[in-house]
Each structure stands twice: as structure tokens, then as C-alpha cells.
Amino acid sequence: MSSGVIKAAFKIIALRGRKNKSRNDEIHSTSDKISSTYTVTLLLIFNFFVTKSQYVGDPIACWAPAYFARSWKKYADNYCWVKGTYPLPFDEDIPQDELYREDKTLRYYQWVPLYLFAMCVFFYLPSCLWSWVNSQSGVALSPLIKAAKEYQSTADDKELEAICFCFEKFVNNQLARKHWILQILCVLSNRARGNFMITCYLITKVLYLVSSIGQFFLVSYMLGFNLSSYSLKALYDMSNGNDLAESKFFPRVTMCNFKVRRLGTINDVNLQCVLPINLFNEKIFIFIWIWIIFAIVLQAFSFIRWLFLALSFIDRKRYVHNLLEGVKNKDNLKDFCEYIHKDGALVLKMINSNTNSLVTSDIAKLLYKRKYEEINSNSNNQEAIV
Image 1 (cartoon, rainbow, N blue to C red):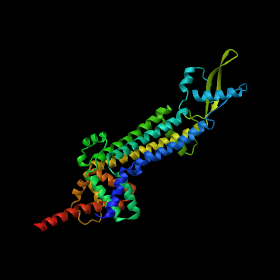
Image 2: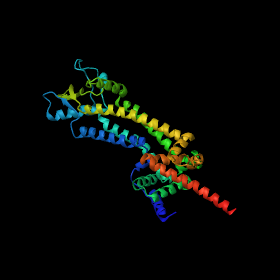
Image 3: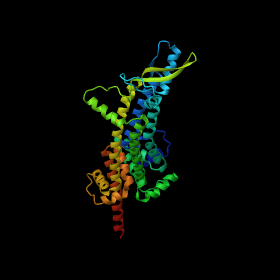
Image 4: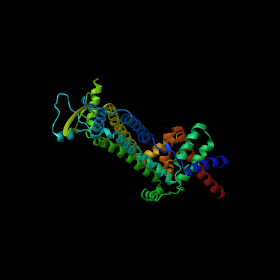
């Protein structure tokens, strides 16, 4: 091995040992990034606009009687915002039953920023778990992918040799697992057969899917009504060219009732209030509903694809066969698939997701060449000695 290859290999290993504060997006597939990066970014943007409307603008404005002083008007707005308001059609009388008003009162809109932030956390948690597994496992997955990206831009053969050298160290299980939890997983996943990383990754994929499905139902629970039915009806109306009508779930005009002491007597006050914030909330939650369905479908498809890679040797063999296109002698293809194990196929897939098929094919071909040319040369030397 030349000094340039050794230097490049040590660079990859040094990157593995370095405490990197970045998220290492290289170790996440496209479907993972959609859930952990793009979805979280969208939710944070929505959160910013809603929070700005609530704390910088006027989220509610109530039509107060003429005898209300300015301080009373401010008190009424704050009280109705905190307590909650209820929708009431203009053709209906104001209900006198307090229990009825309490039952119809909407209380979700005050907590929308916290709801959105909680969704960000749930979408981001599986990504944190997978990043932690990689950082503690001793596998130089992120540096390998970064080196593959560098090879993609430079086409340096020394970089390719270094990638294959580190890949072989990974496949041969020479990198020790650090954390006791991961040591248990090594036993449960049969580490000797190269199942450790793919097992951890499948667990992560399940968490992504469970997180998306859970939030699909959780968002309706938080809002207090069936968001799916409302969103389907809203999309149907919009597809027919109709504007979104006033809704009892995202009302713009509501009623607020409270009691005040005035001249020693307790009086009921009924105020009509406008909620401009619901103009944002309605569109935001319809979009979130559509986006979560998209995330569920994408994660389900991704999980099934990775599950086939983990369980089906034929699927793994077909994938490696495509990478070795152009190699004349493929007699050792089955043995090569068993050599790289499921974890090796996972690494090749990750490299392919972050670079392209040409880079991944070059790596696979060189690994194949290094392994079987070395075996053939050793057997020829033994025959020459005999």
C-alpha cells in the first residue's frame, strides 16, 4: 500500500475519531432526511409565523361595548384569548347554558406553537438515535461517505483505495462497539454475521414510521376534532374551485362570555371576537395533514425496501451484481455478498444515496478485485512453491 493511500486512510479514521458537532447528514437516506430535516424545517417555519402572529401582532380582537375603557378592552382581549372562545353562527341566539358554551369552546389555538414544536421533536428523535448509534458503534460510516464524495469530485485513485481499505476493516469487524447498549444489540443481531448496523437502521426506520403514524392521529387529538375529515372536505371544495367556507373548527369570528363586577353587581358580558390567527392555522394544518400522509407512504416504502435488503439474499445479490457491471469474472459473486454481509450492503446503499451509482460501483469493483485477486495470487504462489 502506497504512502498516499495510507495517508488518505488515516484521514478517514481520524474523521471517525473526531467529535463532530454537525448532524452528519451523510448517514441518513433521502427518506430519513425528508422526515428529520425537511419536515422539521417546515414545522419550524410554520412555528415562527404562528408565534410571531401571537406575540408580536394581535391574535384576537374583540368588539367591546362603548362604555368599555381602553384598559377594559385590553383586559377583555387577553381574557378571551386565554380562556378560549366558541363559534356561533349569526342566525343562532347566544346560548345561556354555561355547560354548552364550555363544551363548544375552542382551546387549541393558544397552544399551536407548542404543538408544532412537539411535532418537530418527534420527527427529529429517530435521526438522533441513528446518529448516536453511529457515533458510539465505532463504524466510520460518515467519514466513509465524505471520502466517497471527495472521490466523486476528484476521481483520485488513492482516495478510492483508502475507502476500500477502511471498508474492509469495517467488514472484518475490527472496529469495536463502545457502548454497552450496542454490545447487547451486537449479541441480539448476531454481529458476527454482519447484521448489527442493518438491525439498528431497521429499528430507526420503524421509529420514523411509528412517529409519522402516531402524529397523524395525535394532531387530531390535540386539535379536538377529526382533521382528516375536515382536510378531505376542504380539498374537495378547493378542487371544485370553491373558497374555504367559515368553519366551526377554524372560525374567524367567535363569541366570548365572561362575568364582570360593576357597581356591586355581577354582569354577564358577551363579546364578538375575530381570530385572524386562524387564517394561518387552517392552511398550516391542512398542509401538515397532507405532508404527514406523504411521509407515512415514503417511510413505509423505504422500510419495505430496506427490509428486503436485510432479509432477501437474492435482492442483495442482485444489487451487488448491478454494481459489478463490467466485471468479466463474477464466479465469486455469492461469496462476495456473504463477505460484505448485510452491513456492507447498507454502507454501499448509503454511499449511493449521497453520491451516485458510478462511485458506488467503483468501490464495489475495487473491493471485489482486491479480495479475489489477492486470493488468486496467494493460491498461485502456493502452487509455485509446490
